[in-house]
Image (cartoon, rainbow, N blue to C red; front, side, top):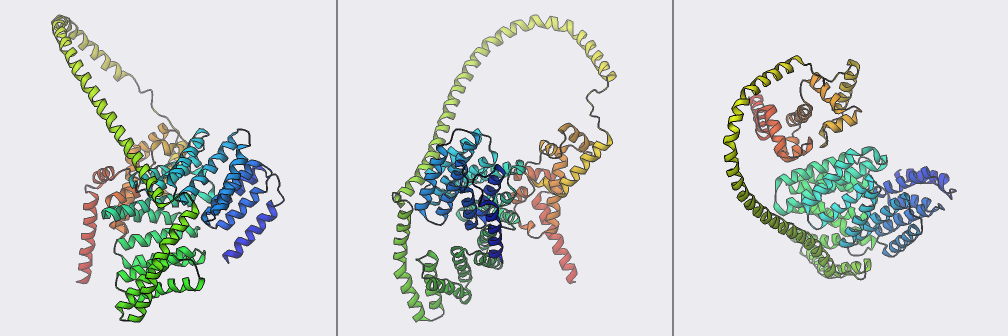
Length: 589
C-alpha cells in the first residue's frame, strides 16, 4: 500500500512539474524541501524530486540537483557517479555571478560534499568541508544550514570518540532549533530533532560501554525516547531509534524490552526494504538469545541470516560470517557435532575472504585511501585537539607569570602610597569631624524626601491585557513548553508577543512570585508528578531527570527541588518507593 501511495504521489508531481523548464521560486523551494525531506524516508523518491529540479533552465537549480544526486549515489555506494555529479554541480555554481542565492547553494553543496567524505570515512576532508560551508552560512545569516553544519561536525567528534564535545555540539544544535523552530520546513523539522536526540543517545551509550557508568545509560535511554517521539512518520529513523533502544536495554540487562525493541525494528526494516539493517537486527536478536542461554531461539535468527545469504547469493557480510560462528557454537552445545563442524568450516573459510573484501571495498571508495591513512587521519584530528590544549595551557601559564610580576610590582607601589596616605589621613580626619554632623542632617533630609516621593516606574496594565498574558501563559503550560532548556523570561515574552516588564508584572501579580520562581515551580511540579505516577521515570538518574525538565545541570535541579519539597530528588524517590512497598504489604495482609 505504501508503494502505491508513493507512486501516485510521484505521478501527480510529474504532471505538475515535468513541463516546467524554468521553475518559479516557490515551485523550486517546494521541490527542494521534498527532495531533502525524503532523504530520511525514501531515497528513490528524493532522487525523483532532484530530477524534476534538474529540468529547470536555472543553473543554480541544476547545481543543487546535481549535488543532491551526488550524495544519493554515495548512499548507494556508487562512488564514480557521486564524484561525477558533484563535479558538475561545482562547475555550474562557479559559473554563476555572485549573489546570496549562489552562496546559499554553495553551502548546500559543501554540506553534501562533507557527507560524502564522511560516508567514505575521510574525516579530515569532511570536517574541512563542514567548516568552509558553515562560514558561508554564517556570512549570509542562514541559521537553518548553520545548525545542520554544527550537527554534522558533532558526528565527526562522535566518530573519533570525543563524546563530551559531540554532546555539547548536539545540545547547542537542539537549542538553536528550538529558538528558530519556525524557520524549518514542516516536513524536515521532526526528522532533524529526532536525529539529533538519537546522536546524543549514541554518545551516552558508547560512554557507558567504555566506563560502565549507569548514569550515562539513563541519559541515553531518555534521548532515544525523545527521538522516538519526533519520528512517528519516519520509518527509517524509527527503525534506528528502536535498534538503539534494544542496545540500551541489553546493556541494562533487560532481556524482554531489548528483544521487543529489536523485533519492532525488524518489522520496520522489512517493510521499508532495508535489507542490511534487517540482517543486522536478526544478528542482534540471535546474540541476545545466545547471551541469555536461549540457544534454540538464537538458532532460529542465525539460521535466517544464513538462509537469506544463500537465497540471494550476496557478497560476504559481517552478519553472515558472524552467524556461522554462533551456529557452530550452538550446534556444539546441542550435541550436533556434524552441523557444528559444517558451520565451523564455513566460518574459517569465509573469515579471511571477508577481511580481503573489506579492504577491496575501501580501495574502491577512494583508491588512495587505506587503513593506515584512516588511522593517521584519526591521529591528526586528535593531535590537533591536543596541540590546541597545550597552547591554551602554555598561554595560561604565561598569563599567570605576568600577573604574578604585576602583583609584586603593585604591592611595592602600594607600600609607598600607604605611607603617603597615612600622612594625609591625619589632615583629613579633622575635616571629616566637621562634616560628619552636616552629613547626618543631609541623610535625614534625603530619607524624608524619599518617603514623600511616589513610585514613578510602576508598571500599569489594563485587566484585559493581563488576562491575555495569563491565557497565553496557561497555553504554554498546557503544551509543556516550560520543559525546554531555553524557557527564559526573554524567550516567553517573545513567544507570547509582549515585553519582559509586562510579563514580570503579571506573573508577580497573578501568581505571587518572580518569573524564575514560576518557571522552576512548573518544572519541579512536572518532575514530582512523573516520579509519583511513572515507574520508568523513577529509574532515571538525577542528571536524566534534570535534563527531562529543562534544567542546565543536576546541581541546580537538586537545589530547586530541595527548596520546593524539603527533600533531595533521591530522598523523595526513596520515600515514594517506601510508601508503595508499605501499601503493597498492607494490601497483602
